[in-house]
Image (cartoon, rainbow, N blue to C red; front, side, top):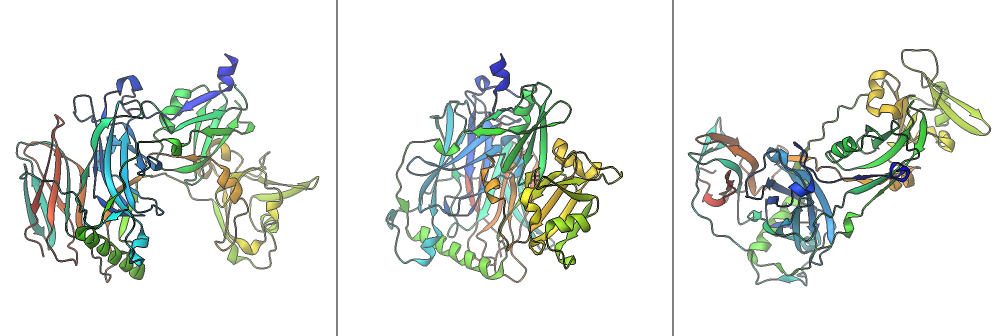
Length: 528
């Protein structure tokens, strides 16, 4: 029993969100996966529709957490993303790694514990292909993109305008279900790809298993999990393992984490060791790596090269996304800009003579920092949380002698309002020091040593945009996923025409409540 208390194991298991259910109830769940294109360049934005279906193929409205693996032809996991399929109306997206070699890759979607996995094959080309006349060894000039045959549209799709803005209207008639559709030029962009459901080779394996090793096993002690890259804290009592699993597994966004344990009275026990499984070790079957390189593929790649050049020249950030992470982080109580003060030699001098509510003392050749609450005159009895370029620690040591000319800003958090985001970690105040970009981070090794937490992918509602005077060359006018249609309902979506004037089509995918899917393609009429 003692051993069980001293070694608390937390499993980042992918659970249904509401209600939360275990693996035994998810064994027959499937993932419906639609990838926005079949042709990408390393570093591209990939738009997706990811949905959860039950054992009868029907949509699970409350969704599930899904692991999405990017797999090379050798069966190696190159990257991994996590999605909450309850947010099917969010327009999921992720960025391909920028260092992928030219080749075939699979996107494998899986709900841990399910006996099924869904696979979609895509072709990825290295940007080096833009600057070389040599065809990759694994490219076949005679191999073209696979084109599916599509039936007529089950919906009535009309294109009009509203104050010179083009509008597509979809009328459901008697059909209902979830709709994804794309308006694009098929000579410059690949058709969407639907995933194929197969028997899973993953079983209940979970690449997000993580172990915390407490310093103390007292049940009402607590963990403070600080998400370094997001600047926020989540706290849990040691005895409440279920709550920790529920909240951590649904945390948004990737981040380095720093985990600290406190006693029942908030006393500092120390930083605790975090061990987690390596997602890179998840292995799949190998598959053919011959990529298509026919004229239709080269046409798409040439257009991508033109768009990349336009982006570099005009810095128009053609591919953009919104981040669904909406942390309500507070602003500092006081901020001191380094360039506003001349003649200050070190950080220690600045803290002693410039920064209010902060003092530095020395005892036995060691420096210590104390802060004073914003609305009180007494000093905290312990040192504040120190953030240096966002990296957390308590004992500043020799870093207090950092040359002041290297400092961009010093921020002080010493009110109840501003300290709230740091939880128990910031109980005695928080001092954040930001260095200028041109100077090396002296605690980089400390940052690199923090474990990487893989949260739910926060990229949503992807869209394309160019600056006013920049040619955008967009081959995709609209990508919209997760649109729920009721019977006899109409929905409208607006977009902007591109300066690419060619033949566009409307591609659609409708999955009804029974799990039946139909896809179709029709010309875009009334285009400019």
